[in-house]
Length: 129
Image 1 (cartoon, rainbow, N blue to C red):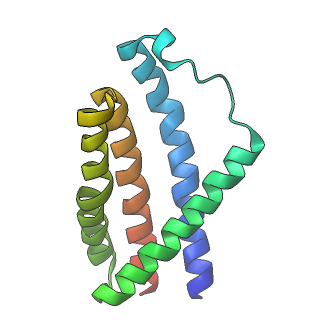
Image 2 (cartoon, rainbow, N blue to C red):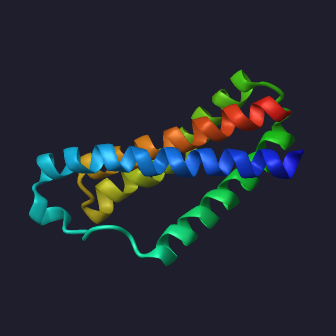
Image 3 (cartoon, rainbow, N blue to C red):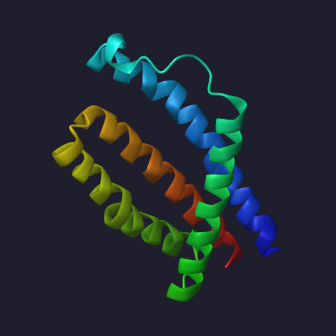
């Protein structure tokens, strides 16, 4: 049951993230200008596979942290997701804005994706704990 839960959580986060970027990338292009974001069309198939594997690893790590913290509900999973989001990607992305000159719009877009993924992982994994 646990492996299935991790797989379902990872797949949900992967699909939601894919949909999220199809919505926010055009908005980002409008704000920053198309020339600043010449990322090409569809990602290469190997990148899609790598992203799916990254999401599976993320789901496994989230489960491990959730189990160690005693999370046993959807609300607990969502709280853990927000705490992890603030403590990890938000902190890393603000550093990217400060030191690597990443546009705040781009960092905000990625922060939103991280929040979406972590919230889905927290909700799905909270159901199986």
